Length: 399
Ligand SMILES: *[C@@H]1O[C@H](CO)[C@@H](O)[C@H](O)[C@H]1NC(C)=O
Ligand SMILES: *[C@@H]1O[C@H](CO)[C@@H](O)[C@H](O)[C@H]1NC(C)=O
Image (cartoon, rainbow, N blue to C red; front, side):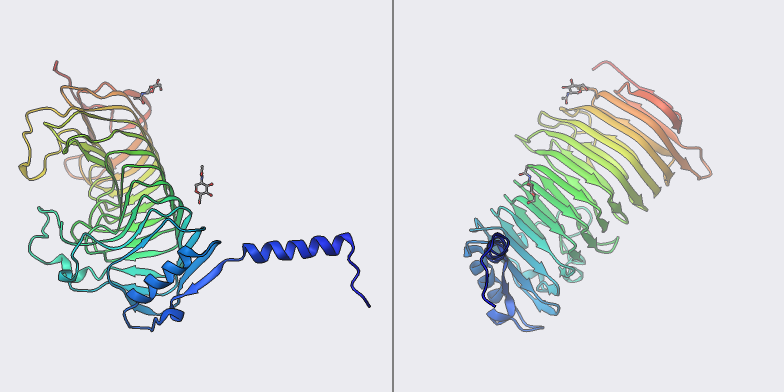
């Protein structure tokens, strides 16, 4: 029976042709010499280069096995959408002396990047945490950040795990429209400076449905963070979800548009906070909203601290010049590990404006209870249920 080229057959052939051109080309690191338990720095770099140069959808695959990899920069621009799919466990060099710069793996200037897979990036941090110069009081400047995203746009990071980074797990700089979905971050509570995701100078960054347990902030937002959504994140142990610290450096960009929604914090050192340095350069942080958050046994669950000055690195008597405005804390409930469950401590020079506190229920079960709240240089709009009673202690003095 001959093939009749009727309309249905022709459209089927056209469909097959179009899916063939749309098919993703796979670049498996094994085809570039990668072998389990060996170093794949070269293999992964070559696979990325070929994938990035491929004029269509491409996918670099790291199969399910353990591999070692040194410092690598996966750079764009690429000719088409590119995926980095990790099914195995990628291990960092253990010795911190190996690292010359501040990163282990970076993705830079890529558009339409997807980092995916059920695999993990293991920073082998245990070898670094105990070292001198990496205590609680000094920044581990010479230790690498596990994953850096620099100037990455319209991209997705999903399902991967970052384990035991030496310094921050993930750093986002200069990015636009980047979503972290269902990401797991894991390091011990005692590991220093292991922030989960740090975001700075970036727009439209989403962190959703993710679980972060680490030794420092679960998520921290630096200057120039705009249009940030943090939703469905489980944080703890760790230092909570933090905006700032702001104002330490000259020419910082404003923070604006941050929504933290439907998150749970458990056994964290702080809950949701905004912190700015006293004696700071001028700046602003506005339009920040915290809604529907559960606190389980959290120290300082709600905190604005415009006198943030750890280890006496500043002149605390000179007020912060960062203007904080349009902030809301709504529907925040659970247990506080500290008596002063709500602290809104604003700058004497620039009091916070348009702050709303609504439906708070934070219980404190210590002998010196019940929970209290403190408002300094702020006159918040209060609504709904309030436990502790809003602004139990209130201080407003003329600047
Ligand atoms: C943001 O990035 C996602 C993922 O690549 C993409 O689907 C979406 O279209 C982008 N949004 C805009 C406004 O470009
Ligand atoms: C604060 O919110 C008000 C109204 O809700 C808006 O008009 C104003 O532009 C906002 N200011 C900032 C700095 O976001």
